[in-house]
Image 1 (tube, protein in one colour):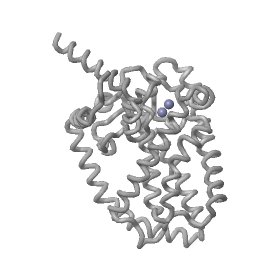
Image 2 (cartoon, rainbow, N blue to C red):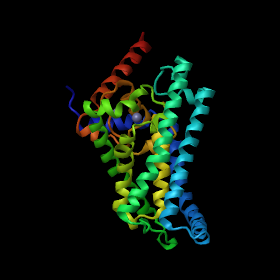
Image 3 (cartoon, rainbow, N blue to C red):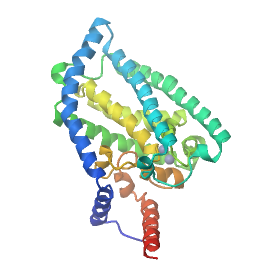
Image 4 (cartoon, rainbow, N blue to C red):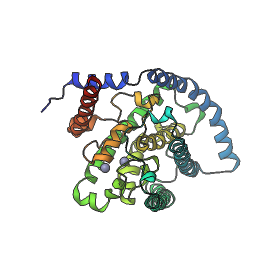
Length: 322
Ligand SMILES: [Zn+2]
Ligand SMILES: [Zn+2]
């Protein structure tokens, strides 16, 4: 069995970057533009948010609750709508970034697909409109209704604080997500809970939040909330909102069935990309990580994935030489 060394890991990462070609430059430019324009945007938008809170005498915890809740739901459906367009248009520019060649479920059986879509929407509505509000109300009961996060304009984070806090959230959330995901694959939990999410063996954007409510609470919501609760008032509400925006976008993209060369977040080191999570859905083995592949490397949960792609590459090399 091949021994995984630091050099193997670095080679894989270098290949992941070089395979992006020109997209790598677009990704870097996109990342730099965000770094440049997000801080002035924060300074522009935050006084407006505070004015709104003062004018309508909204309690801060309610503002953060209603705003993130409504924004997340809208954001989730908006990104999925964009992917619907991409699925529908089938433009070459997008199709070349597909992570597999399997036909989409709606192309296989329209009737079955409609049934599955209805079921999916019901579960997503249940998770978003019943589970999330219940969790937030419980959180308010446990931690009090004093706002958990900082709202002061003077405390809007500088680039360093923002970077350190989001890195902390990403790493801890990834650890908790991976751990809960691995537990969900224990046959007892898999059969009763996680199997629902795996009804999609071809992952598509909308299935990102198609999960049994128990999974949605313990596998998604709690891992997301814990790092934010640990940071507490050290975290600015604006950072919290952006972390929400990123996480929702990333999970839909990770299930979309496309891996675009120009997406800046894929350039983060050791990122678990859409292709990586798609393998988990299509083969239902290993690749438990959510954002980064560290835990899969440490516990050797991603060996089958690399074996699978090594085989595919070998085959394509052979076809080229023939
Ligand atoms: Zn799974
Ligand atoms: Zn999934």
